[in-house]
Amino acid sequence: MIACPHCDAVYRAVQPAPRARAVCARCHKVLIAPHRQAGQRLIAVALAVVVLIGAATLTPFLRVEAGGMSNATSVLGAALAFSARPMLMALALAVAALIVFVPVLRALLILYVLTPIVLDRPPARHARAAFRLSEALRPWSMAEVFAIGCAVALVKISDLAQVEFGPAFWMFSALVILIVVQDTFMCRYSVWTSLEK
Image (cartoon, rainbow, N blue to C red; front, side):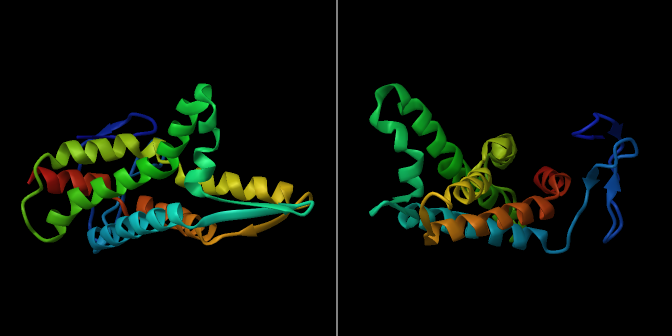
């Protein structure tokens, strides 16, 4: 049985034909959409996410210059900007977790779950729990929200100051695309089916 995540309609799960999809009859949400070589693509995307976030935390995100003064910051510097005040330390750590650590953890969990499946080996130990945790972290992985929010804010302040985007900004822009690709290729039903074999 499979339940629609949007309207909770329940269906008997049937593997669709190649290049076909199973769609909810009530709300038209795609329930099962297996893609050819999706596992390899998802592993490549997860590796790219880890590399991009790792590199983005070490390189400058942006530089702002106004009135002869300039300031540059990295992603972690922006996330931990409030950490100087003890009252806001929890907020700074939460921001850093949501834009850096949670997306990396989710990508590592996907690698842990999918690598044995793609290599035609038995699932890794605790792979079901790892995939369940990866899915639970999906709404909390906000690297792409951070990148879009920064882009909107920087457009607003570009009239007041000179803004230069650093390499980390472009890495986060690529990250937005990769996360969309990852969610497009991920057929959760196929992963669960592979883990149950």
